[in-house]
Length: 319
Image 1 (cartoon, rainbow, N blue to C red):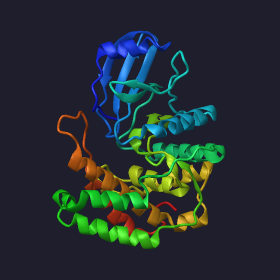
Image 2: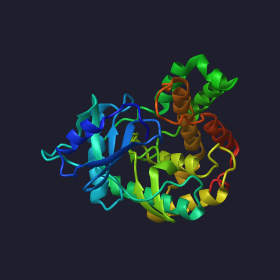
Image 3: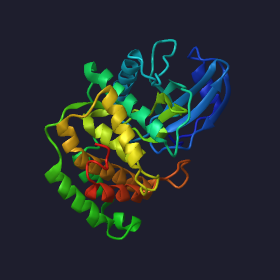
């Protein structure tokens, strides 16, 4: 989450008049994240999130995201639905951007998860994958391997502004992934961005899963690898926590489970996860507007993870 587009109190009050969501009491921009503009909105009827979809989110994809969230909520998952206005619309326009008023879910995102919290997250990820076995929507992954190559090309020599030699390191990894990426694993719709800041918790219980705007159709086990890479290290990419890794895989196995083929391919999937986030963070690092209310994230945190996965053995990964 972040704030790129400013919304006045008058515009927000006018928007709320079209919902059964009370009258505006207060609004505050949310600085966390990098993708969309987000506001915490308090009204006489409760608390909501207003999301304005910025340029990285294609407005044509929004009906897919809305259908996905409704499907998961109908299956009993704690995900935030987009509120419908009085005419039944979920997607509106605010300040020239597509926008949704979204249910607020309780809980906090943890910055240093415990094994118990990581176990609960793995179990919820498995529950999501089980719930999506009969979801018929599809969306291509624009940030799969072809997308990584394109993004690396767009960053070009500027990668070396982040760290000397980073461009060559990325090129080498892309070559390895081209040769090693698994092609026969099961596909489904996946979250594709299940970082700790996209999971809300109370103690060791998951109270919400949010930010589905990278959800897509791709290798299902890659979703587990993304979660593994984001939950099992210190935030700067050092300090791998084997206890969290074991807990995550155990939780996932309890509710869905990895096949033998997926376990064999897991290290390659994790390396792909690291390169994906290294490149998107690098692009944002190089291109975030100076006046945006947003916290840039260090691309090198995922280079360190990538170096770890290159040499890791399956047992250390919790497999």
